[in-house]
Image (cartoon, rainbow, N blue to C red; front, side):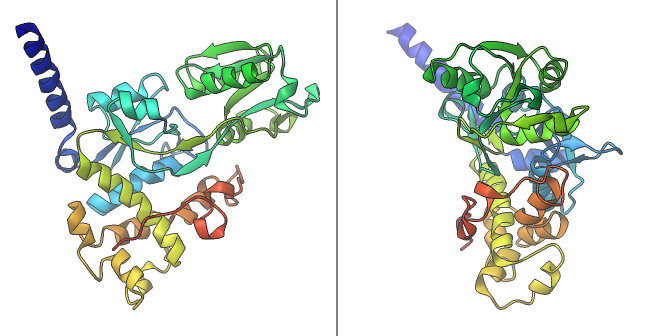
Length: 338
């Protein structure tokens, strides 16, 4: 009995310690004077340093939006490049404040890794890329093919499920990093490369001859990608969540980086609440009431971020598809600010 009580006390204290470790992230961020943001190792359109070493991308904008809301300065972000294997440990240990790195929201991750997903900033799905010279028309033509895949990702399980469901032989070749996986495919160690479809379009741009490769039409999984935080700090979760929702709401209401100052004079009650000229919604998050104005002024709305990073104004030229707003045929939908 004593052992059971002692064990229970230990578990309780451990849970309490974990919760306390995750608490007051906003205060810690303010003390540091920057947000430490966990990223990948470079994925065009989502998070990659440019020629000057400045990180840019859809995931990077999530972090810059947070810095804008808190510091009124989108540059107050320190990017930490992480492998798929290390990303969750870095968040759990407190090495980073938020993980914004093309990471799939799953039950097992949220239930067992001590983290919570704040939102979905990109609805994706897993696909396959092959050389055009193979003349393959479908992923179901990959029976017996060797497939390059990054270890420590949901991609491995999805691929195994797809091949097993279709009674196809699988030759999986795994690598620790995204770069190693892509290079192995390019040098011919594998017949195909699999990852999220967005990643395939991004990686194809990095190949010596992008036009020699094609992304097959099948999407074999649901991959809701988004930022995550440690459990135990509801305030920080709310800040990350609503900073993203502010960008969606701005797009829906037609508030842009170019017209946000003019919109401060709007009599539209939804715009007034968004920009902080009515109500105290920012204060309820622990921020200033112009928190969303700061985000839009420095980073823009979600549509602007999408277009310049992965959409028509980017080399990837990905269609909005599922990532269009809910009222334009997509899934992106923000709860109301009221």
